[in-house]
Image 1: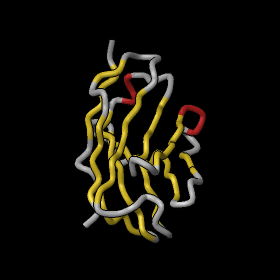
Image 2: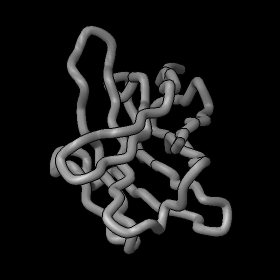
Image 3: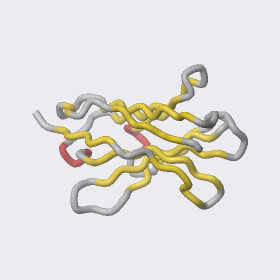
Image 4: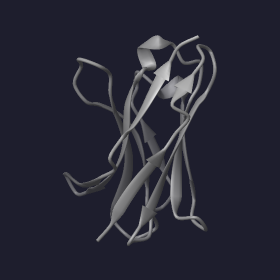
Amino acid sequence: QVQLQESGPGLVKPSQTLSVTCTVSGGSITTDSYYWSWIRQPPGKPLEWIGNIVYTGITTYSPSLKSRTSIARDTSKNHFTLQLSSVTPEDTAVYYCTRRVGRFYTNWGQGTQVTVSS
């Protein structure tokens, strides 16, 4: 059973870079056909897809966040990381990591709250 666990800073100051890590257990992030995604949910708003890193290491980002987003992986630690630069209070959200297989998000982490505030 694949499990995902997010870890993040909790609180980030405006203009700084947010960094959240997703550690995967029970399966490899290099397994064929899996897409490892970041999704967030700001308070009172719907889920927003941020981007993903494919089993090959190729990344894709939301056009609205692309200029500030970087997703990377460490295959030796079986984890992948989201970095979002120049954050503002609008980036306050619960950040989730997920695994997508085909069209389906089959596994989710429990989410980590990140608040942007001075």
